[in-house]
Length: 242
Ligand SMILES: C[S@@+](CC[C@H](N)C(=O)[O-])C[C@H]1O[C@@H](n2cnc3c(N)ncnc32)[C@H](O)[C@@H]1O
Image (cartoon, rainbow, N blue to C red; front, side, top):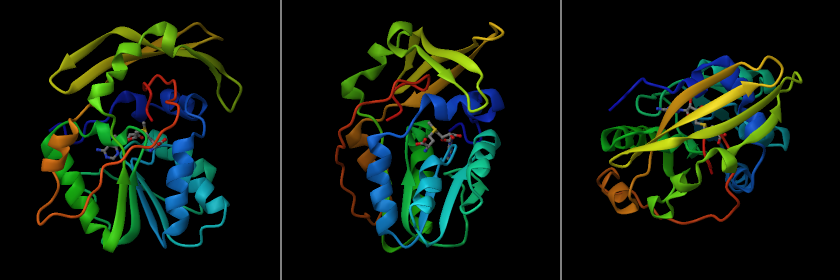
């Protein structure tokens, strides 16, 4: 278990500053926001730049909203959006806020950054500690059977984006994509279109088999239901994070 390791794509301010431009609001955000609005309190783990909880507050949620992320650079972007959400530095595997929530979420591909069964079990145990009785955990992880990495080539992933302070960038994913069991690693590159400077990060995601995921669930069994939500995947240097 690589506890404590967080990819540079999230810990570095330049990469984090591009996240929102690369990942605009998506139908998946509407799905989770409907859950937010039906819950008295929400814990979003791996909240990244905090767009969803910030908007959930904006559209009128009056209960406690807490966004947690291990990457300070992502939290800095979230904090700049609103102070009306609690932003906390923390890791899904070890989080212990000493409080319980009606809804806990782990969205985007945050759950796929838990790179082995031990990490998944630790995170699920932590979610259980943070939920009220009959509370809901909602998260997503992409099915390896869809083999999305086959489309992770430069032509398919190239984006031209502009940061909030008007800096133009291009970003893309380069081949080769590497496989190690159910881990998929890829290189994401950004190029400043003003200076021409390029930076590349190496990222790893886990594509856990759905049946195997079922074996990670805490005992005695919580009730869990796997489902699918349709929607167009985003193009992103963090490939198709939805
Ligand atoms: C692709 S972003 C998703 C952000 C947000 N949930 C969204 O949907 O836009 C993944 C986030 O997971 C965070 N992350 C990485 N490892 C984590 C861990 N062990 N526990 C919680 N979050 C983690 C990263 O720092 C990053 O901000």
